Image (cartoon, rainbow, N blue to C red; front, side, top):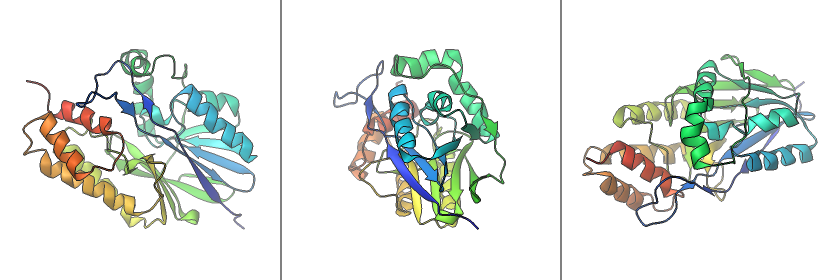
Length: 284
């Protein structure tokens, strides 16, 4: 008989970025809050998407230790380093925890961990804050894996805010840990969209999430004040539809940025939007 299952979400605060220009109003660019989800049975637990910095990982590790559960696995929804660099110290702290990801995610993890990429981006933007080393992730197939008899199923979503992304579905909790397929109260990262093609792919991924009909949806980046409500699927869709409509008509980065801010004034971290704007509308 399956035993009780529960989940708990930890959200890191925004942290400042280094080595990048300010926002149009002169304020410093920040990094979006990162969600990490601990799925627990009576004895064992699985962590989904450990955060980025050594300090953040230590805080999540303390919460795992305080739970009294045995961490048996760390699942990574996609290859962006802010959703798995923390697995480096956590795998050392909890040696029984196996890092797991789909093959597509593992490939992107390797690219993010490449010394040249780390030096040019992660270690530049967060000097001295990113854990050193790497992890060996075990490939997970579409059948997923179990914790105390409860199945956890990876759902492939293709390109959302990067390539080869996934969500983790927990049917026995009606829970969808959506990774970066869904955002909750935070400006979306459209920098890798390439414009309309990437946005269309992301919209298709939201249809996959919606068909699962979850009662709870944990977004990879969320405003810590916001509930993990399924309506965030539709809110993410609305943001993407607005971006899709405005992109062809915008005269440049500032125009697109201002128009999106006017439509979504309550989302936090406009730096994510500004980064997309200056990528999609490079200076002539």
